[in-house]
Structures are given as structure tokens and as C-alpha cells.
Amino acid sequence: MSLAEINFDGVVGPSHNYAGLSLGNIASVSHKGDPSYPRAAALQGVAKMRGNLARLGVQGFLLPLPRPNAALQETLALDETAPRQLLAATWSASSMWTANAATVSPAPDTKDGRCHFTPANLVTMLHRAQEWPDTLAQLSLAFGDTDHFAVHSAVPPTFGDEGAANHMRLCQGHAAAGVEVFVYGRPGGKFPARQHEQASRLVARAHGLDPARCVFIEQNPAAIEAGAFHNDVVSVANERVLFTHAEAFADQQGAYDAIRAAFPALEVVEVPSEAVSLAEAIRTYLFNAQLITLPDGTMALIVPEECRESASVWAYCEGLMASNGPIRDVIPVDVRQSMANGGGPACLRLRVVCDPGKVDPRFLLSEEKADRIEEIIAKTWPEQIDPGDLGAPVLAETVINARRALLSVLELEELG
Ligand code: SUG
Image (tube, rainbow, N blue to C red; front, top):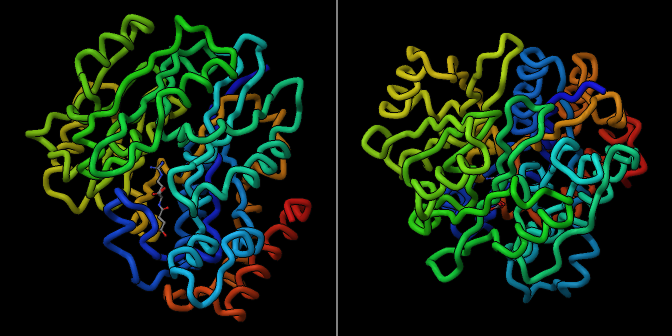
């Protein structure tokens, strides 16, 4: 069996909008009320996927979830007196950020030798908490081969679980046994700590991980207060490399020591605060990058365009490229529509290490399939949505039909 790392990107849904729903997510709050451009957003996402398909030879995707969510609208008893934010929640396209779809433990790490998934319950935010049952259904279809995959139910409330955004895996190569690092937040600060320690520990047990190869570390409360609502806003790992801001963890040196105790080959690339301040790292999403291993064995960092526009961040990136370190290339991509809601290149993908031949092929991208997806998006995705438009029956019909057209062209109508 040949294991590969596959990035499953979320296709940006036709209801993509800026309603400012995520407290503690600076981009989401500061873009509240702006017009959004769902068609441009979705095309930016496909362009990113195409780039990685060319670089890595394999790329997957997950489909937008059904919005507006009629069942949730009914549960919320929405009428004209209900707060507008509740209506907006039922229209959210937030499932595009598939780093929050699930936590994934690849087969080499688990007791039964299967690749395990736990959909994230995302209980901290209403607009995200509605995702997991549909995500579970989609994962069960894409990874339905139960000889190779196990898809669990979500962690029960009240333990908040945000999935892969608070999870990192260190290994000598993707197919080798890894050490899984779970990063949780301590509640009590100005903003919600979305990932609870007990949720992380539950996922590790459910996935059958070896306790000696699991590390649980605390996010820096100051980073959460500065807007790092997920750990993947301030650090990212790939194979033996941890690329991190110096203020990511509550006890930075203690975190490195704990990881190194379980994974002695750890190579830390730490960005000092003097080079890039925490605020600038969060503004530009330098760490919300895809750190990938290219076919020649070197690593590249796929960063948002915003990084190239920041003097301090780009100076750091140029230094990285000129160095002899493990990261040799930094590649900016335009995902501005997602960025304005707090989602960078890494938020938009879920990494799954598995045999591509075992995945339902309908969820794997080819150039030809990317053409078809782009065609549907160009034809059916709304060009612009103003938050005031949410709730309009005509827009609801457009959004529902657009998603259906995409499911139909991909022969995935069963996702409903
Ligand atoms: O959960 N934004 C998402 C962004 C998720 C980013 N994911 C990772 N870091 N992995 C969130 O805060 C904004 C929605 C709105 O305001 O309409 C939103 O949900």
C-alpha cells in the first residue's frame, strides 16, 4: 500500500458572506457587513487546489454543506424579532475551512492500522456547530472503505473540539509512524478557548493512539487574546519540521522539550517576535500556511499573498528561502476572500495520509474535474452577497441550486 498526504480542500460555498460571526477572529469581526464575492472566493480556492495538484500530483476536495440550513432555522424559531446573527449563522459557508472538519490520525499511528477521523463538534460557535453531522456524512462517503478508514462521531459537548486546526503530526516521512501533538486552550481569557484539553485527549483515545506518541500542549493565552483562535494561526508542522512563532505556546521551551521527548528528530524553525511580531503574524497568516514536501524532498510554504505585502514578513520569508534550512521556497497564493473571514491556505485544507486508491474517487481532483468545477462556479455562484441579502428567498434559491448543480456534475447527489 502506498501512503501519501492528500490535501482535501473545502470548495467555497455559494453563500460565502461576511456576517462577523466569530468572536476572537479579528478578520471575521473587522469585515462584518462587507459585501462578499462568493464566485471569486470559490475560484480562488480552485486555483489554489490546481497549484497543489501540479506540485504534489494528488489533491482532494470536500463539498459545501447545504445552506441555508432550514432545519436549524426551524429549531431557532427564526422570525423578524430574532437577532440577525442567528439568521446569518444558518447561511454560513464556514465548512470551507476543512482544517476544522475533523482530526485525522493516519493508519501508521493507530492501534488497528486504520486511518481514523473524528469530525470536529465546533461547539463554541453556533454557525460552526451545525457543520458536524453533514461533515460526518461526507467523510463517511469519501472514506467509506471500513477496512482502511474509521469515521467516529463527534466529541460530545461541552468539550469544544476544532479538529485538525489544533493538531499537528511529526514523522520522518508521511508513511512512517508519527507523533501527534494536540494543542488546547485554557478558558477564562477575553476570547473563547475553542479547543478543550479533554476533547483532545478523548480523540487520542478514540483513535487508538499510543500514549507515548501523543503530546498535549497548551496554546499561549496571549496568542488567543491577540487573535490566534486556532493553533494553526501561529504554527504548522510537516514531517520532522515544526514552523512556529516564538509566542505560540504557553511554555514555548517546555513544548519543544515535550515534543522532542517523543520525537527526537524534531527540527524547530522558530520565528522570533523581533523578526515578525505576533500581531503581524496573525494579520498576515504567515503560519496558516501549507508546509508541503515537494517530490525532490525539499519543503515549500504556501502562504497567503498578504505575507508578500508585509515588509517584516516578506523579509523573513526571503531569509528563509536564502537559508540552508528545511524550508526552501515560499509561494504566495491569493485566497483573499477566505482571508477576510480569518481563513488562510491551511484553514482551507484537511490533510489525510492514506492510500489515494482507497478514497472514493469522486472526491479526488484532476485538471479536467477542476475545469468542470470552475465552470459550474462561474455559471451558478452568486457574484456578490451583502449581509443584508441573507434571508431573501430568491438568494436562497440561487444558493441551493448552485450547490445542487455542483453535486450533480460530480455525481455526488447523494449528499443531498
Ligand atoms: O471558525 N471563520 C472561521 C475561520 C476558520 C479558520 N480555520 C482555521 N484556522 N483552521 C472561524 O472563525 C467567519 C464566519 C463569519 O464571520 O461569517 C468564520 O467562521
